[in-house]
Image (cartoon, rainbow, N blue to C red; front, top):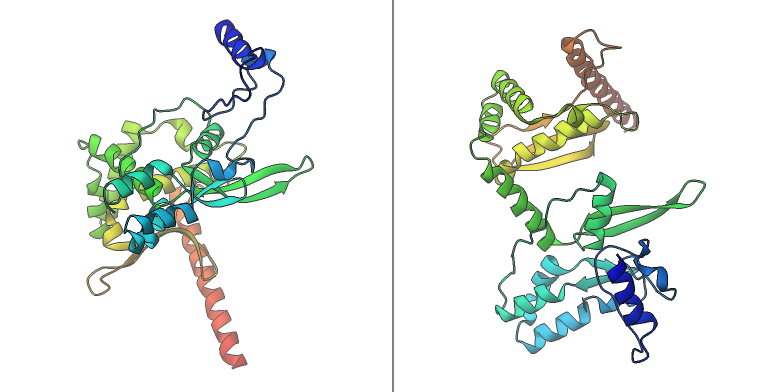
Length: 314
């Protein structure tokens, strides 16, 4: 700390030969005492408008160089893969490394997997880091609460980043090939609920922590969301055979996971719902299941009543 404090002070604050200095990085470090000797720093992040168009190529620049290199027909493909970075209010910013690599390879899609180390931060800090590093972008900003705190809706930046995460998750499953993940899918397609339960129990005993599936005061549906994400990971290999959707409104409610078969003649459709056993309200798992089925029946009656009303109106 002492070295860097002196280094930055001599480089930026008391250097008579320096007109302007730029420190680049990923996360803000101005809260540290390193900068105690500097008092004229402007911190520019991914949410700032200042210099926003300088952190990557604009769409006009990208399309112009594609035309110059005889790759004008690849514009939509390039936009699909590499567009989406957002700096402040500026959208359609492209990663220079990806664009130059695409041009160097004469139009071949650049799919190098980006590796980053496991992070020892809290869950909330991870989202900020992924935003700062460009893996996520800001879709919407909402000001909430008495203190006008900013709430960000985030999404994956573009198709290239989505492919990177897909490859990374696939590698996790491949590295653990000794765990029979495909058995869950096989049991589901054979309507073998008992084998599905046995598989989930085996994985839970071998891998899950109580902290993964326990409730907290701030999140009553934490166990449901944990199993929801886990099962999505198990069935990802069915993406080519089924259209898999999660947490979408449908009819009079919201399903957790739905699998729509691409071959409707040979495959069934599946709807997966996650329910948490509530010992204060339910005596056993059978009652939890009964309550879930009763909810489905109630939604079905609402649908029938709505259809009857519509028919009468017509």
